[in-house]
Amino acid sequence: MGSEEFKRVEFQYGVILVRTRRFQSLMDKLGSYRISKTGAWALLYLLPVSAFVGFYLFLTEASVLLSARGAAAAAFVRTIGPLANLGIPGINPYLPIVDGWLALIIAMVIHEGAHGVVARNLGLPVKASGLLFFLFVPIGAFVDVDETAIRQAKPSYAARVLAAGAGINLVTGLVCLLAMVVVVASFTPVVQGAGIVGVGTGTPAANAGLKVGDVVTQIDGKNITDIGTVIGPNTSLKAGQTINLTVYRSGEDLQFHIKLACCYVIQNVTTGQNITSYPYIGVEQITGAQLVSTVTTYAAPLGNPWQYVCIPTFPFCQDRVPFSDTLSVFYTSPLGSWGPPLANLLYWLFFLNFNLAIFNALPIYPLDGGQAFSVGVKALGRGRLSERAVMRITTLATLAVVALILSVVVAPYLYNII
Image (cartoon, rainbow, N blue to C red; front, top):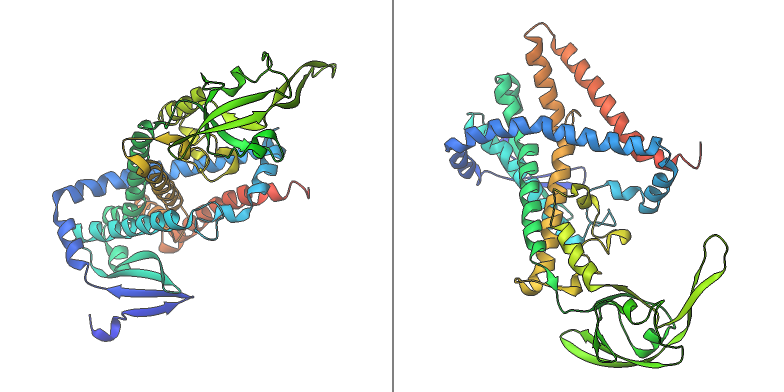
């Protein structure tokens, strides 16, 4: 290829493409291994699996919106906002900037790299590889596999190259999920006690200086893991009494003297009459037992795989995810302070790789899944279908899937209109 055909730096639609051939030898070497051939077939079989998972998730969400719970689900989606559908850190308000970008770049690098390695394993040329920048910030990677060579290659060759990206993302996502589960399983409460996850403004606790992240270990010298066992419906304490709290904070035991306020009232839901009342200090807690059960539940993927759909940065997921901003302070692990950040990074690696896999596997042209779908239709036609007919079928499949996705994305915002 002549130097005139190779542009090292190119500007397209606000994105800077920096091309290089430095990774050609690496892709050649990786492609020469026998495992690359076996892996390419395995990744091809994973493509329909990824597409099925994507369909299942979209159809599940559509069925919920059409069910009796549809209005409530739509209201929840509206609180999240439409930008949550974009997997771009800094635009999506729930994707962390540092971990989000790192996970996204890694996902795109291995996605594109898999295309190149499989192409070289099959003897198909790779013109170049490189990085994508937006305003000098790296946002991804690309590998230029010769498109003409792919179109002219055997259907099985083309399908394997196209399937490699989504397949490796799915494998990477699942590996990161398992690694995250192992890390979370090592979490134990930093100290035995009741964690403070909320402090009411103007309450005795706030006035005394209690903070979110504190752990109450003793009340009046008695070890506790649940504040409600001492200050609750069955308490003998009275409003106006002063109690002594031992609180663990940042490796220290602190003493607080708090005067109980009056009064928390429990009413009969049917009659509206007061059943009982008791004093309070004004905190929201997570008990020691709940801290343990949260880790146990989260580290059991076969028990409830849907729990990993709960995004750690969502407000309502804060008390369900052990490494969330709210709960991470209450745990320690053999990894020390690296435990929660590592679990968090592994989660986003899982999340973005998984979503990149299932989205790219869908039969949407010109995504990998759409191109593979076209190759499959052409192969099934065995020469009886013209290129035009193959493209028509591919276009119809693309429009159907895009319509499904748009209906799921747009429907929640139509509930207030129709």
